[in-house]
Length: 327
Image 1 (cartoon, rainbow, N blue to C red):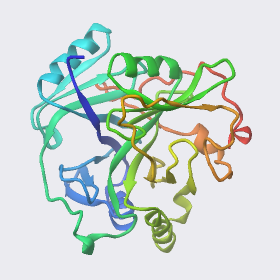
Image 2 (image 1 turned 180 degrees about the vertical axis):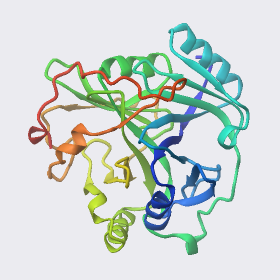
Image 3 (image 1 turned 45 degrees about the vertical axis):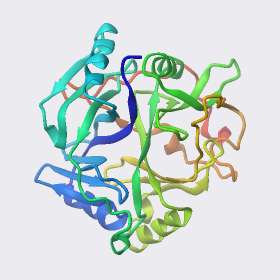
Image 4 (image 1 turned 135 degrees about the vertical axis):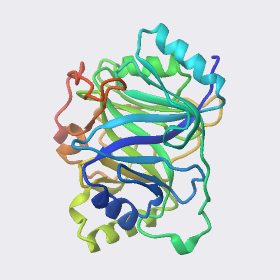
């Protein structure tokens, strides 16, 4: 390939009340607020030295503007534009310096209609990894991955692995061996991008890496003590897929985030993807407790890169099993 995608690097999404969101993300969960204005809050984890990994934009309705990926060099952007344009997919250049991205940024729609963003550089700031006096809440370290509902997982899987250079770490296969869900990566852990079968495209969650499992427990205590106990949707627990500790939360606008720790390296070239049967109850929760129906059915819509309107939601091509049969 003539380009190199490094990792998932940021998500830009709407919230309806910036101050309410600041109290949740910064005060309760411990994100670092790098900068803010009347329309945006720029947040990052303690380990991150780039300006931000999460942009919260003030808007009337929830929606996701883009999932951002960092690329190796500026020339990669031109090659990516050629690829997406050749596929008949929308492309759009952002002005240089937009949202603290240094130089150009390219936005596109992928094969499922998900708005992606690619950029090579971002403004830098202080890395706070050893500023333990600033650790609070969940002690969020960095962005780790995103997970999306798409109506055709096989189609998305083929595009990302064959056209964008992603590798598969784990996947769930239905009875006919069609792919029901897939975990794909560019960096050398379990995933940057996951896909789940469902009506979409919609964002299922953004995952953030924590320093240790106790940070998840402390996050629960912080949320409960501050009156946010109702935002805990699922967990804490351990995934069968990825082996990671997890906690799923819904922010005040219903956007889902995952606090995440404990997966594994996928760097060896002879690594073989792990197959999970759709009926294996350990795949979602290794300990056996069930996920709520909302976890299977609810997500945040994506926004068109040109119009800003919601991307059309299409019905899933695979029949989804009822949540009570999927643990």
